Image (tube, rainbow, N blue to C red):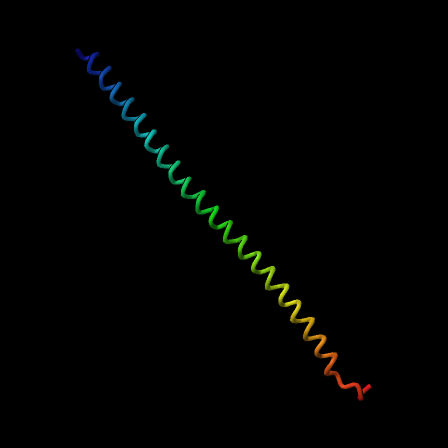
Length: 80
């Protein structure tokens, strides 16, 4: 009788342990799915920011060129 109870308790323990590990595995997979989605969102935001920064840098270069041109036009030629 004692052996039967030990076997039954062993089967219950093994089932409970495997169910616990199964739950933990599924929980981490769900969290990693959310994490990967957040990472993709961040990567997309970074790409947008980098492209926006590149456009702004081009605009700044164009403004600098226009300012240099205006300075040359407004330069006093009589001082030379």
